[in-house]
Amino acid sequence: MAARCDLLFIAISAHAAEKRNATTERANEIFKWITRDCRRADCLVFLKLTPPFSARTPKTISSAISKATAAKAEAERQLGSGRKLARLEQE
Image (cartoon, rainbow, N blue to C red):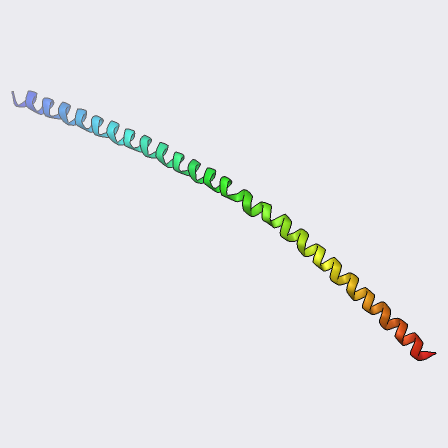
């Protein structure tokens, strides 16, 4: 009779361990899905927020290039008038 009780106890313990492992595996699987969905949501939010920043950058660069071109033209004009004055003083 004691052997049967031991065998029954071992069988019940094994079944409980299998059930615990199945529950743990299921919880891990659910955690993986939640984590993946959170990462996907983060990526979508990032991509949704990115265009305003990337749209502003070319406008800023274009504006800076225009200002630099105007400043260069003004500097060349002043340099040209300075050279004319230098030639007039030499004559």
